[in-house]
Length: 117
Image (cartoon, rainbow, N blue to C red; front, side):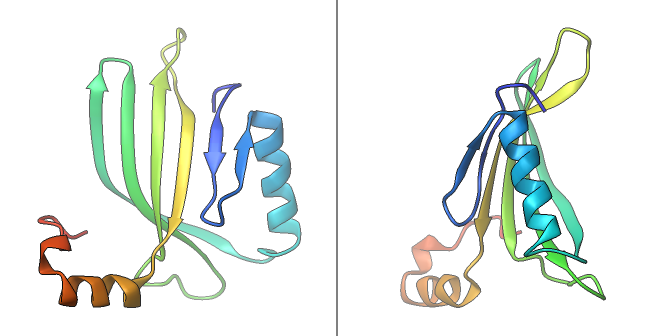
């Protein structure tokens, strides 16, 4: 990640900078997420410029068997650094609400995305 990376969690907390993000993850995995594993899948990669990538995916934490449906939507902004390596400049994590999504789609079909990942 870049030194000025920003990370926004699904509960609305914003972490700024590598130290803040690393420490928050250490605490999460030592306390609330202890014993869990991470699952993720990439849905889309776009390049708005030669040194910028936007990656959209799904992710989740779990114990035991990996879930078939991942409950979070993740967006990463990556930048290519002078050394040629790609690093995360920003990350945003949104908890999916499948029931609310289904109700919205049923009552307002115009909200259904063309490409439903």
